[in-house]
Image (cartoon, rainbow, N blue to C red; front, side, top):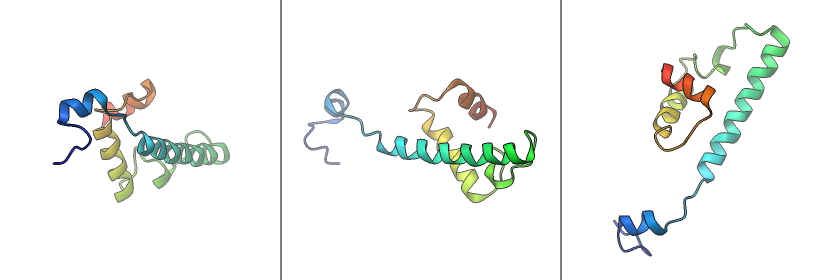
Length: 90
């Protein structure tokens, strides 16, 4: 694997600059989902069935992928305490 301009992996870790663009994109999508959820709850009540908009409960392919992705990313990204509790329940 070429790591140019770094001489090896430890040099990359020491001098590399992390790219958080994917994290920012995910944060935007997560915020969009939260807004949809909040809107449904405002209209139908706090305990309304959110269907596929509830990513933590939906069995849709996208929701399962999202949960697995976030769980894997939690090894590298620190989440807010409330979100981390939900991940730990998976």
